[in-house]
Image (cartoon, rainbow, N blue to C red; front, side, top):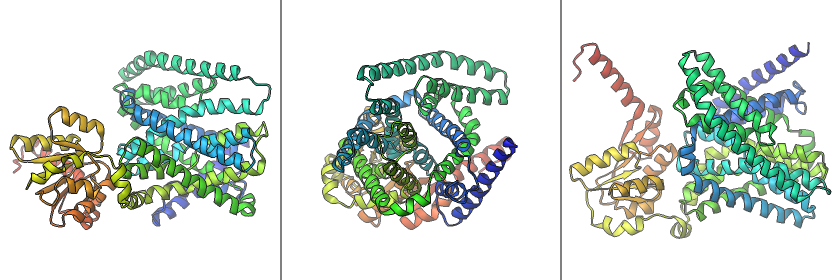
Length: 549
């Protein structure tokens, strides 16, 4: 009967989850919040419909594993190398300051140094699952703030390994620093061995399986690489999620990356939804109500503090205000690995149960608020951009240097974004000697443009000051071809504020964005899915012998 009880629990979780998410969707409330609320309702501390949290958490771990594997697929090793600055410098600043400031505050309120350091570890880590899921749903992972956010999350996940290793030493007075260092070195060596072995074996295995042309066998192999690498890493004392991420990096460097992504997508979505339910099941409403004041103070302090730390990290890296503000909003919560650290520390009892309970409640509330924060982030970033003092001091852009030259230009074309579309447009304008200037927030694109002798500058197209320096008031047209949908709308509004009569042409992905962008002030909107559909129809008609005008 035990197996049937387990199936009953899954039916309850999925049934209530589907119902709540469908209701939330009707009111445009984020999906993730719906699953967390479903967990609160069905959990043992809610209506008590599901009591076996352990079984649910096992499935949740699979969801986190598949999510991290998918992120690894999207960030293969060659792409990760280009993010080294964001990962190492940005991540080090965020994690270091979070631990340091939290430790100081905890010591000030008379927590022991061991408990203070543990709380610092817990607060420093953000939710990889929730943040990446939110960015993915909004199509912002490859946006500038998305890359910055992912870079810091990668560093955090790397730090989880030594953090979990240090906790037993904090609770064991007989432990030595030498033993901790030895364990850490062993883990680093094991990670290296796993990476090298997988790098040599996985491509050959994937190639052999792909030659069979059996899709079910290919799917099983992808799951084997993902879960197998994660399992080996976990048994070696390394984070399960980090092992899955490493596996994703390996497969992502092969030619089978896109097929692997397509095949695991459905599995990942189901299991990661169960993870969000498991987070909600941790909530104990009877323990929260008596301590709600303390929990709310913790919640506000943690989210505001982490926001400011990430914002500061972005400023130190000389990133635009908008990027820093949106990344800060995305990373302001406490992460799922914090619960793992609380679980490890529970056996050593150097953090009082009341403090641990309040911290856990604040963590769950911060996760619940994150989907709403991500939706609100563009408005918050726009508000931060209005602080002219910060803009002048920190908004790094060479647009000011180009303002003298731009002032001499008239009837020129401004190009926002130097991806494939921006490059092709710039090349066509150059061929016909049409004056133009390009602005991009990605340093790699700017460097590429400079090597091609393009008139390109580094700047944020959502900043009215940058557009003004580029001569928007004298320009003939402003063409926006970036991938960040929220940035597109902000850029249109910024252009309208600088030059109400400027012709603004926008490229967007979906037809449903047209009304929103038109209302923002776009004169013309080119929809990628419409253009693609027209090209497909035209091609098929030509193949069928129909003359297409």
